Image 1: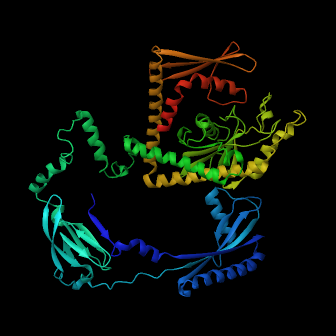
Image 2: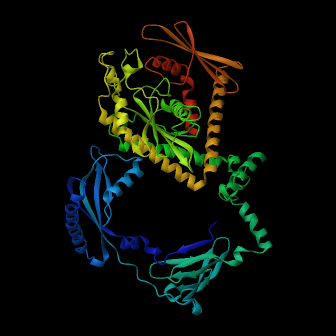
Image 3: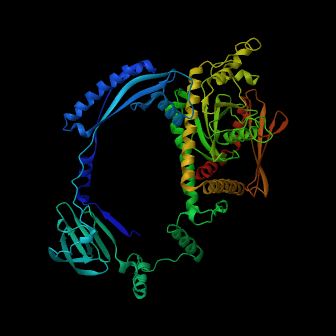
Length: 610
């Protein structure tokens, strides 16, 4: 319930006042196409001064005075060889190159060791609107008595009936005076109604502050009891005999309604006890949408900053948020095939740089970004799908991971596109990367990733036709876009932690994962019952390879929601690992899709609910 209302003295024409107070902006720009060096500073400054004079003159023609006009200088800068420019303000006496590097680091998560190019110079001239006329404030020590009302009226109030209502002219009231409701305050542009039980106080600026009267805030006990039946019979006129819900449902409904009046969840628990946060359904839904929103915004940044057709137009990418152990928290609805495999890729990197891993000594630091695509060792799908993984730090500890996976048009191999149908070795499909720090200590490792992407070409003598990547520039640009998407995810995660605390965010991360598991188990149990399976039963599906060899998949489900996969190919039994591998895995995946076709809709609904 609201207890205080603030009514601006211009409330009746607030839109018009907003237009009057809005600043007018004039911009002027011209191309430069020069490298940013100290020798170019005088020429750039002279061009900015000339543009500033043009923009200021345009504002003067609209009636602005010199004292109302301010001018800002900008340089549109980018690294040489890149296509993403950053508008950088050039303040007198500052270094625009340093300002550009700081902005680029913040937006994209890394900087490059390249010359900086000035695409164009720009000025922004702003005409500041005149302030509203000030109202002379009266001393609070000498508040005059309330004047007599201009007239007395009779006003009908619902639930009370007609009441005598004094009418005051607002321009005759002084700051600090108080009017008790019921009353009407009238001026040239608005009429304000003060209802019974409310008081209006005129502020020093002649605005009106309306609050609940002291008597209304602390009514007598008898008055509270007399008002209670009116509150409980809000729907009396709509339903004479409303149906009563079962007591358990009534209790759950009351608990949900009570949540709306509770204080923030962080304030309900003692310090250090947030790890034991009880799952609240409303908070669970809110956090689920916040986590999903982070992944979706990462995808928008990736699409906007990439340049390849595969990512920018075909949208062949996925972005996701993971826990500190690599478990999936939220995966934006980009490509479903990435849904399970990305978690395997993140888990591998966690183990790789964790205790006992090959990268334990090197470890992970803030400013590091990892890259991998190996399908057999590092949880990849197929080689063109490159995964970029960034740890999210909080007080020196990894608390989340963000990752983006994008399909690159070519990463080498024996055929363009890096998906040859006749490959017998993994290297024939392109560069296979187990783990590489694409960004290390905030610096993009362009030389290192270039060497890796071109490495299949070194085997051209042993494997005729094997080549490194055929489109290195697109690879590098899209990898930078993936790093930028991850940087956006880090910023959003840190904002969420700052808003709710790390303990609460991670508690609901675990609640969301538990809810996802429960939803999928429930779906599997329903599928088992709908098919009439026994307590532990199996369903099978069969398909053929191109040469006619049979391939069969068996899925065993119990009534606890556990599920086990097993396959049969050319007389051999093999367990089904997560969806990953080289081109030979496609037939197995097709068989898996066929077997669970009936379950697909329910499974996707369960995942999306999370």
